[in-house]
Image 1 (cartoon, rainbow, N blue to C red):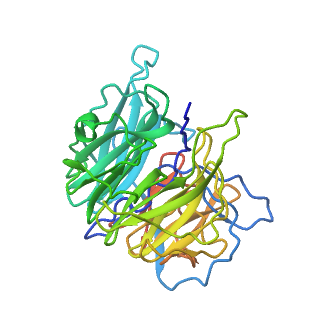
Image 2: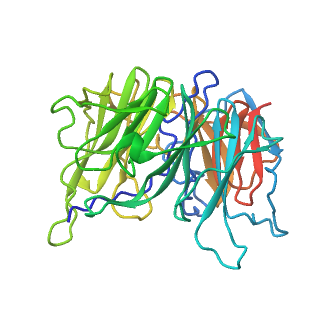
Image 3: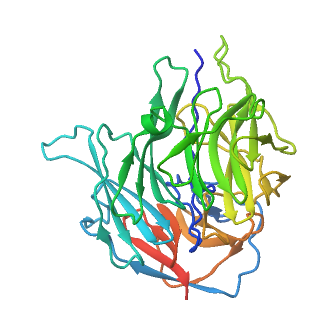
Length: 422
């Protein structure tokens, strides 16, 4: 059996949705948290290994934390634990969106059927309830993983396990559903089988230049769209993606990127996964692709590349596992690029994701002792500086999104906070 399975990408920010006017980030999915450091350890970025390079001098721009209102219908217990089970916080050029995911417990037990309701806000102070998404056939294993913005508007992307009939594709996380919207409140579900000819996709991304999606099969498959509604299958130039296994796709300045690996992902008789080589491909038209040279790239079992957009014209690439449903792991293979084609080895410590971007710089949370210590920013993903922050902020961060007014953060107790220039 040809088993292809990769771990969940905790970064959905990687080049997915840079708003044309407001420079909003691609929204991130909820990050996992690194183990708490010892009392003598330096602060670390959320969901990352300990930082190996000190932050640069504090910038002169001042930032201020302010508490924001909860979307309507949210109940917080006296212990501060959010009673509603699941949220997904995202941002776009028009503001902020929270997708509230609940299960029907009216009969005393859950049947697994979920309800996903969007709440939208321009400033995080007042929220409007939107139209519940069509989630027919969706269960509690599926949720909103990312919100992307392109020239046709917004697209909400769900995430869930997928396996085809012959088990040649078996992944713990795939694009199981898509919905389109122009305002974040009213959503229309995309028929995946009709639009793509498949039941599930590997990845969907957007940018000012349009939309791109890649498939899950061993044979590379790419779809392109100008509005996120009508998709066309790209007739790939012969040999341009030979040996490619696609894990993610990106719309970048002047073209597109694909990231994944090369090698045969079949498990041998001893159940030992073969070595795979992380790889990145670039294209101006989505048809002819060229594999980039990643200096010092190391082949190892079940590894693939992924890309993060720090700012317009500044990209970073790192390595994660694509094997099993276990938590994503990374190693020290990192690169940077200004065009997506020419990649150079990045300095140690430059990657400490997850990262959200406002289109001009990237931001990352720094935790210490399990608590939020500070926020760092970078114009290129290589050199990071601590923000000069004042005011009482959240004790921790569950998710973050960069919108038109600043960085919105949801704490683990369900409260919302805005970090903006003050």
